[in-house]
Amino acid sequence: MQKKTLILSLLLVLFIAGCTGSNSSQSNGKEILKIIEFDSFPKETVRPGETLILRTTIKNVADVSATFDIGKNGKNILFDYCSSLYILENNTEVSPFDDYSGFEILTGNVRVYYDSEGNHIADEELTEYSKMTLDPNDESIFQWTFKAPKKEDIGADMGLSHTCTFKTQIDYLSEAKTTSYVYFAGKNEIMQRTYTGNELKLKGDSITTSGPVIANIIPSMDQPIPASGTWTFYLQLQNRGDGIVDVTDLSIGEFKDGNFIDLSDKCSITTEELKIYGQKSSRIACTTDTPDVTMLTPKRYETHITYTYKTRKDLKIKTEAVKY
Image (cartoon, rainbow, N blue to C red; front, side, top):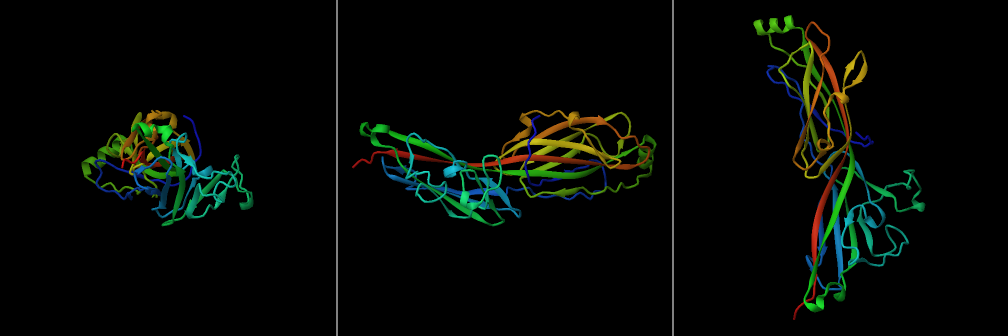
């Protein structure tokens, strides 16, 4: 599995079947940055050669800051359109952000600038490689000014029209970390608790999240788990947002004597399981040896997931000759 690095936080909830006591905290995952508007002026239909204005409004709807790439002329936001027909007005290369009317940032400030190698540069050396950070409740409006296709380019004189799909998207880096506890016990201990009916009090999970991914560690059997042989658990990742989760790095393991023992190689991970579309989930099975314990013992497991979250909206614009 290819590994990259990203940033943010997630949530891991431990559901324990068959146990009478639990102290696991839970949270509703939600997106951080959302495209709350993608609109055009005029709306839907334009005449050949007419000026067309597109606006995208991006808002931080969470309680943490997030950074996303803008790209030259906003190309990382308005990432696809019929560029051979719709021409960005006055695209003079003077600056990727101002000094011409083709692309503007109407609200919001570009706060972080990088060169092609990711090095920070001064504002006066502004280049095409730039990013914007939005704090909670902040929003930014991006605007592009185009000329619609010429009549001869779409055959408008012959009664033909042309429809173009403009596609806007944002993608930001996210990170998920969780600590969970799973209980193991020797056979005698398990039998004794079964006979006496003693209530099993479970230690709560340590959960931090503000992103759209919720993850659960689900043991394949009731706890406490017999400490002999192997045991299987499932890592379930759920996308609570409308965008796409693209997991690029995943590690899961046990803490033993203060050291992290990586168990990723014990999991059946495929490329399909690491790309999760809106409102869907992915379930990864892991099988490993049980810890060597004789009495009831909680074992600490941690999961760290890094991913890119992508949100997209489309807008169809039709160019046709006006009939009188």
